Image (cartoon, rainbow, N blue to C red; front, side, top):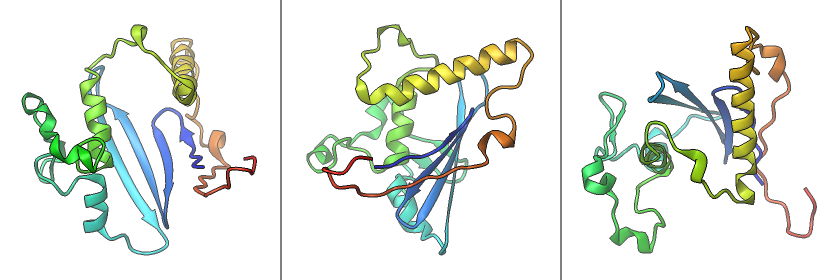
Length: 167
């Protein structure tokens, strides 16, 4: 079970073994988003290992100098189809997979034809909250999460619970 806080409108805290990822998704304009990942924990982080897990070690996908996603669309985003026999996506890491999902959706995704399933319930809830925030701003009010008091008690557990135990 992994439960992580989503602080409206842009922050996620994602627990992992001995470290925490704080991810900021920040809109630059109507069609572009910047992602910032802060990794922290009780011990120093092995940056080389972490970059490999995220896929940011490979210059075919990430430009270290510019901080830009680098996989070209015209080459199927450098997907390694042969590697898909041992890696479901054919991409080198979690951040690369997330980036490709975001980029291939297009700048403004048409959500009218989506086929959501039960596991998308959190996504639906987040979209409703974002729409509520837009309505609040339009009315001259603060969006959800604009005040730190809204998020005083945050927790982000990541634990294994046996199948026969309720959670």
